[in-house]
Length: 516
Image 1 (cartoon, rainbow, N blue to C red):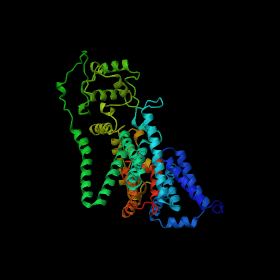
Image 2: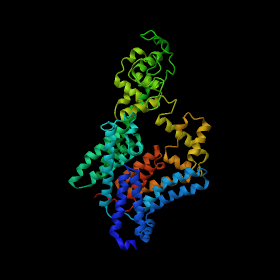
Image 3: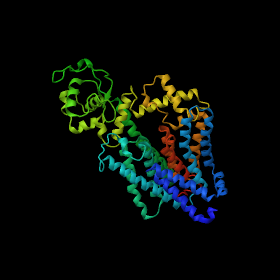
Image 4: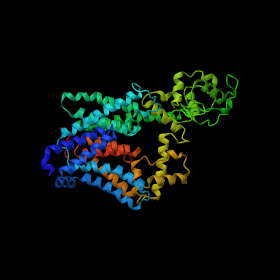
């Protein structure tokens, strides 16, 4: 009835408007995201062309696999105990089902519509990322940001970094695909996304961006000739090996200290503390040598409003941050060398920066943090890499006990909490989180069949688009599959919305004809 009243064009535009709202809301606002979802589903109910919907759904094999994956979450309720957590997880996973359902039922009618929606997503991403950057640089506002994670004002820092990587993939693809001279505006957009990824220090975002660029170059290279393609593969492998070599070789750059030969008193005549933990390093130098906390405490309290025995702005013990920072500058931790710290140094320490190397912008600072974690792996708390290693180790232990059918939809966190207690984990209670690995999480939740179904859902999508040489869906798939290794992407609303939206857009068979 309503379809006859309003007409097909009205519903087509209404559907397009809902998808556009979703694309705007994804990098900017959960409210707009919810409005977009509501509009898309409401339009389908008003149009009520259910025969056509069912025909489109029935003929889309990839969507049926995705629907089976969602159904696994419902089946997992049969052996779960924590239904509160289970229903919360189902609420998030419902996005993964509903958005593809709506877009497969009523696909976009042209590639131009799809391109405009993707450009709208990128435009919103440019705007929000610039707001993030400007706020962090204090070009407006009065808030003093002490942590790079505060760079993201519109959601999770990590999830936003993944969106930026996807924005770079879209810009790169259309820069190559479009014939119009207007496409050159995509160059500054792509450069901005690359810079933002570098500046934001998000490892998963950097990894996704690097793989996007590598995959694209390999794709284009093989399209020209096999020799060029293989040459690019070798070159890119060498380029990828360089930062890995720099990171891991630097771990051996440690100054060995003969404690018996250390000086025993400061220039002011006070004794240095006995060198405890001489194997704890910053920039290859032991931290707890030449340490006189009596002088350090007095000097610090005379120059800072934060007490020496309090926490810094990152909620870390300030005295440890100060000691690490002075060590990184090659200073002794006494009153004499404390005088060499500038007002800027004091501000860095108050903000929780524990190494002069971390004051650098971009990934050099992030690499320094990773180096410190690998050099000092005794306490994983507060260190993202070391914590993940603990998550994965604990997750694997849970899998060995529940490999067949898992623990159910809602019991994953409970299983982790129990195993952390059994192992007497070094992680503090606030840091005892889930796997941060989507493959482990699915295996823990639903057993080996759940893991295989999750892998099949992604591999089938990849193979289908590889056969058709649809490069942009392949780039999205690489982003998703890669980040699944180090993030529980689908366990958050933003992550689930990202996956559902792009998976849905690229499901229709003729969404992206390859370039001739």
